[in-house]
Length: 372
Picture 1 (cartoon, rainbow, N blue to C red):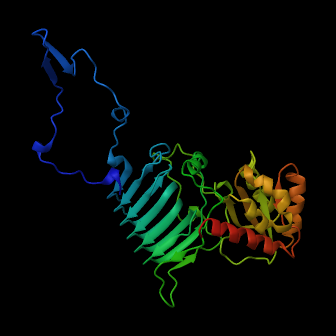
Picture 2 (picture 1 turned 45 degrees about the vertical axis):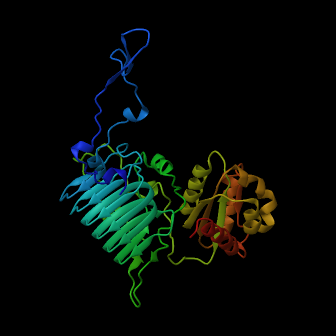
């Protein structure tokens, strides 16, 4: 598991170095007095950066062998370190900070919330788990009956696991947006429904999607008022979720979709969130989102006739793309662009006859760009 959890090497006492300060002397040719060299009693020992580091206790980064308790870590307690959860039963676990990697082993009947994880989240030999997870990579092995509300930047992988159900991430606490940034994750890159089963069984489904109306609060409760997390303003209301709620791989309600792309600027993320709110308020559905960087040749391939006007804008940073769905969505998006985002550089599908091609061109490019 890395340096925090590696076993200490066993040495014989005779092998240890004698670290007692010593004084070395040499004789000069001109006098019989000894000249002290090395550690003088008048000179303070040098301080190095590694001497000033705060000592790390591995127990601060582990939850082990717990039962029937509410536990976890408050914001600011992990600060990007790795974390381990193992052999817990019937626990409510809230890790409300960003971390490097998290492994969860041999846990049963637990409710778990994991703040943004820069690397991988790996469940092994777990059963009856309900969880909310945001990470770069998600993987399970030898697990049974898990309900996962997921935000994952890459394709989630299950291996030798059964009864796995997935829904879109829905969660909020005040520091979460900063934790996503610290973990290097984009709230718009979520492949929660694109599951890869490493060990499929012919004629059986090891995984499925949770019902669309599934709410986190019905699976993972907020901490009770008497817990150590009472000071954190947690919400599992989808409207407050840091990650946009998407339909994912579920069947679309309409054959008409629209591609809406924001180019980099000071308020790109805020504008994308506002566009989502505007569209949902009008009854349309958010299918998927992506945030990716583009090269001039990518712009020409994806946007074709509109490329010339857009090439200069992709040098300013990544673009954020939305697929919105519903009858009449193209005209509605064009109206919103003119009325709400008139001073912002955007691309909007021009008509419903070509909008599906726009969607496919962009998201196929984005998937290839991200290795999906």
